Amino acid sequence: MSDGIISETVITIADRPIREVHAEIQAAADAGQAIVLAEPRSRHNLGVALPAGARLRFEGSVGYYCGGLNNGATIEIERNAGWGLGEAMAAGDISVAGYAGMSCGASMLGGTIHVKGDAGPRCGVAMKGGDIIVEGKLGYLAGFMAHSGRIIALGGADEACADSLWGGEVWVAGPVKSLGVDSKLVDPDPEEVASIEALLAGRGLNDTARNWRKVVSAQRLWHFESRDASSWLMI
Amino acid sequence: MCGIAGRILSAPGPVGADLVKLMDAQEHRGADSTGFAVYGPPRETGYIVRAMGPDRGTLSGDLDAFHAILKAHGADFLEDPTWDSADTRHVSVRMVISDPEDLARWSVDADTMCDRLEIQSVGRSLEIIKDVGSSEMVADKHGVRDMIGTHGLGHARLATESSVAPTASHPFWARPFADVAIVHNGQITDYFTWRDKLERAAYRFMTENDSELIAVWVSDQMKKGLTQAQALKKSIGEIDGVFTFLIANTQSMGFAKDRFAMKPLVTVEAGGELAAATEEQAVRTIYPGEVDVVNYDGPSLTNTWFITEQRAAA
Image 1 (spheres, each protein chain N blue to C red):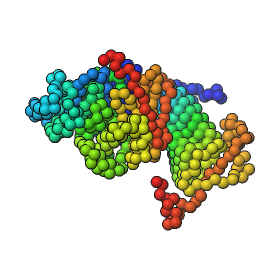
Image 2: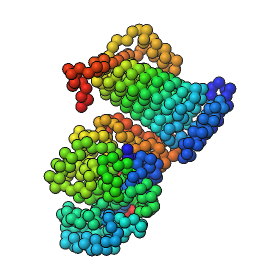
Image 3: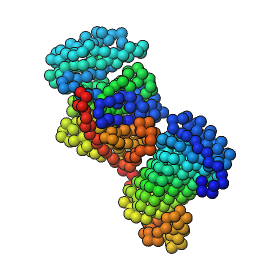
Image 4: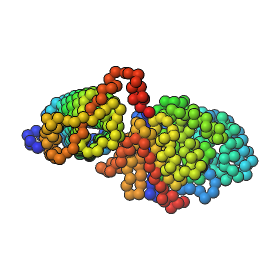
């Protein structure tokens, strides 16, 4: 790790029982060691429920629910992540070098997820806080039924962006294929744009020429009105 | 939940062993039952028939009756039938038959005794092996790891819509289309509507399983002139529900995924070969190193892969 102070421990995952791997990760995290996970082989439920201060780096792709229930750990994934990355995380930082599968950041409460490739469908579904930064494109139904928090995408968004958004914000630089039910585009304030750009600059993503679209809830579906019935029928 | 898998080799090889690996890694998705469809080197003439009987004790008489129906359609056993030697009451039988004069007509008559011996698959190349229990149990019982072929399908079942029984397991044969098999993860919500339409078109179903319906639906579309790729695309707009299914014949394998995108599929294509599975960790049992994995996570997707070397070792 960059500060060179704490020692680094290597744990090999391969086909070992996940419980055994977990016990080793927890022990190493308690001892304050930075942890390198070798041969993750897209296994599920890796690095879940980690405490603040834990530092993990996966030398490959991970499966479902990696970094779920995170309480403040910093997790780096060198290739791709499967479904439910960082699900229900409360704090911490997760970064993925490649693609993040379905429902990245589902129900997350806080912290940051940084996806350097594309994100799959339902990115940030039901999220209640925190930030998801996607350098590539958002899959369809991004921010589906999110309550709060921000999803920020630099490479556009697929169909039904911000579908059924209750609250929160979806920021997209690049084309949005279509907006979902009950969401609307609004003109962002310069201060808001500056705060988004500052967040991105902190991650080395400097570009002042971005054409931002900010998507928020249209709030028509917050309360049922019979005149809106057709909007409630999704199909 | 269910887990599905597909495998294509660049030449005939241990496809059974690969499918067992893919399904072992997905046992947690459903261990009610496990099944495999293996495409061996295809025969020039004659068919391999896989059948299942509920009562091992009456097998001898059941085979005689089956044989009589076969002969009435101008065909015969080309080899003595073989069956598993497990101590279960139900029994799985493998037969090799010469070509009936009309395969569809023969299968109608053969199905009149489906309560005694139910046909599971018919094909020049296809053999469907399925049973209750985990991948390991089914593979051990039926020698799946030793099966050689070019391609195949696997399925781990968590029953949601119909009974748990050896014959209700996947894969399903598209009765009466030789060599067509399907595995499916999902639920078809307009099952009864489609089943009714297909039954009016004289198709027969042995189970109440929605997956059996998809196999016949796709084959019927192809009979009407669509290519498999076109039929798969059409299925997304015509069949209602959440689904990802893999369908195979002697020449190709394809998948379709519904517009809600709830059922995963990943593939690895390397060196002219393909591994497909519900979960990425399953394909990584075949390719443990870091490989390029395609995640078909989006809605309304299809793809078709072609089998190139099917006759190389025939």
